[in-house]
Length: 559
Ligand SMILES: *[C@@H]1O[C@H](CO)[C@@H](O)[C@H](O)[C@H]1NC(C)=O
Ligand SMILES: *[C@@H]1O[C@H](CO)[C@@H](O)[C@H](O)[C@H]1NC(C)=O
Ligand SMILES: *[C@@H]1O[C@H](CO)[C@@H](O)[C@H](O)[C@H]1NC(C)=O
Ligand SMILES: *[C@@H]1O[C@H](CO)[C@@H](O)[C@H](O)[C@H]1NC(C)=O
Ligand SMILES: *[C@@H]1O[C@H](CO)[C@@H](O)[C@H](O)[C@H]1NC(C)=O
Ligand SMILES: *[C@@H]1O[C@H](CO)[C@@H](O)[C@H](O)[C@H]1NC(C)=O
Image (cartoon, rainbow, N blue to C red; front, side, top):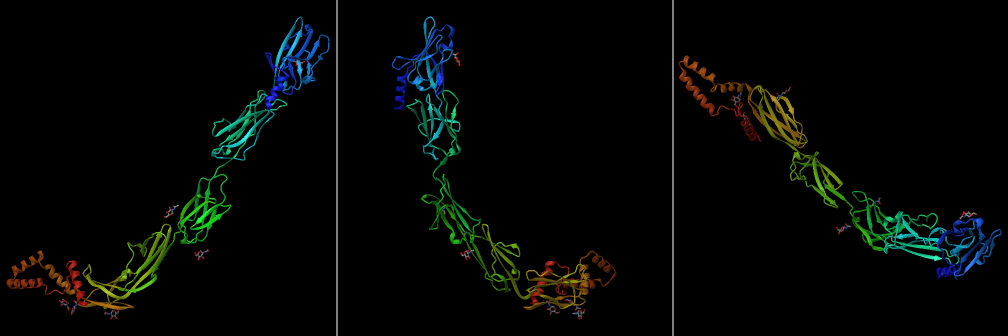
């Protein structure tokens, strides 16, 4: 309506009919030249300026006659605003939009010539402002971002919206720009408004929005840069469990509810195994000194929307072991030891055993303890990063027993070595019935001890070994033959079947008459020795196995 009436008003005032056009700036003095200024002033007799009125008539403005002052005949709107320059240009002050019509200069030299000029008045916008600025932009929802207004321009300004130096165009979807022009009924000036509706994306968080206009005259106008908070509702909620690894009884656990969205939610609900806890202005909940009952599924969600939530399973690890018996355990050899290791754990644990620091293949069992069972036992129970240890020390005690009493010839044949092997605990004391030279005593390991002496028997001897400790004693005897007799027998043994003997026999046959008798006697003697009737039960040069067997049989006889 306004623009229509403004047009009517200006139409009533004047009319545009000419061909030459000049542009004037609104509010300033406009010079309208007469015939482009190509006039020889000295030849001019009369110059008159008039303008075309809307009704087809013309209005007089001023007249100049040679050697006279300018006579101003303007009425109405032009009164007081028109004057003429020396070169016959019409000077029109405080140009307005209603001045946009055809002004004609009539020049009388010999004849009369008319020079019509169209006047167009331009005005740059008074400024460029963004109004109705949105507080924030919601993602995916087309929101009115703002309205860019270019006030009081002629012709009406064209406004362009920009995002990060990229022009925005209406796309009928995410971007919608509605432009409208308002004409001031008094001045006829146009104000252009460009309203931008924009559907934001997450990446628009720091985007700079602005608008600009390129006026018909003058420099480009650019608005200030705007940024917006991009809001979006929560889409994801994650429950974060902050707990030491492994989580064991007595630890603290903090449950933290992480949610996206802008602004981010500030209040949450925690479901703690049936219990509901509301947390306002915070996202965390801490549980101190957890116990094994704490294990289970935990959940957090938005305080007003339980469907946006997240769950986590929390496991409190525990590992309790009970080894029975423990400490120092004393048993008599042959007794039973019932061992029990009870494990109470959150998941199946692994058990390993060591005895005196050496790994065992399986859990020890003691149906009947023996001396070698003595030692320090340790069990290690492992479950993930948790480890428990317990131990006991088993001491097997009992009266000593002689396991073996044996003899052996010394390498040089001049002494004998007697060995007494006994078992018992505490460490038995070993004593012999004769004075020998003590060779060595083995270390006391697994309840076993071995004692050796060397003897040089001048006669046949019966030697006994005695072992004793706090629990009792044991004794055993062995017959040891005289060394000298054995040496003699050794020589006879050696002569049997040797080449040397054959030679000696040959000499004897050649020299002695009674060789047959002696030979017979010798045969009888040899035959007798093969039956072993002369043997003492000892074989000095026999195989070691034979010797051992004989030794054993001699022991059995004594037991
Ligand atoms: C006419 O004279 C004015 C000053 O009086 C001058 O500014 C202007 O340029 C002149 N116009 C022409 C067309 O010569
Ligand atoms: C932790 O809880 C246990 C029982 O669950 C209790 O015996 C103990 O005293 C508590 N410790 C602390 C530091 O509160
Ligand atoms: C927690 O454990 C239960 C039972 O094992 C299972 O059904 C559930 O899916 C688990 N929850 C999560 C979040 O892993
Ligand atoms: C052993 O020697 C000691 C002295 O050294 C002596 O008194 C004791 O009679 C000897 N015993 C035997 C069995 O020879
Ligand atoms: C020693 O024993 C052997 C056989 O047992 C016997 O032949 C020998 O005569 C005995 N010697 C003495 C001195 O008793
Ligand atoms: C040791 O010799 C004696 C006789 O000298 C005999 O009675 C005993 O049985 C012999 N012992 C062994 C173990 O040979």
